[in-house]
Length: 233
Ligand code: C5P
Image (cartoon, rainbow, N blue to C red):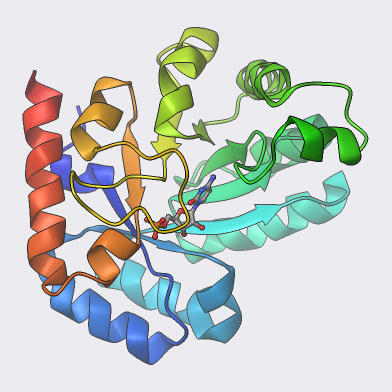
């Protein structure tokens, strides 16, 4: 059973290591898990990830890898040496297989992104797919499960349906989380932390509701408390 604090992943969507350090400092012991994506990774984020890991934090590298199998495998081997906990890849069978085979046994877990949430049915058709988003998400989730992927990134709205496809062993990691009353920003399908946990999410990824809060530590603590209550009920 995961501790409530370990179920919150704060998205460090900030432009520099200095800004990231400042936020991590402000959040202190309230937050144990951080996501680093394109913005920070290309601005010194990898050495910073290692610093976080040395400080006892867990790191989710949101790199959404996709390339020929050999290149994915070599990249994943390098990421595994960093001591990262989660790494994302796009949910193409070759890519997922290569990542799973290369992740080793040092604790790195591979998460698959089924269909980017910015895609609707028309976007998929324009990209050459003859599937709806719902069909492709379900197909790729089943493939991810069969290949041995460790978890999926999905909206909380998809969590219950995906749980029925992939069973209980895979982690479901859900962004698009907004505490009641928070600004939704550009997220279209949002859920409160409590509802996301009830829908079957294991980890919640939260960025702006914490980063832009007047008191980020208090905002994070409130979300951890909400997760704890929801997990008990
Ligand atoms: O600020 P906010 O809480 O919306 O941030 C959510 C984080 O999750 C961002 O880093 C965003 O890139 C990421 N994400 C997302 N939707 C996805 C996958 C990742 O919002 N489908």
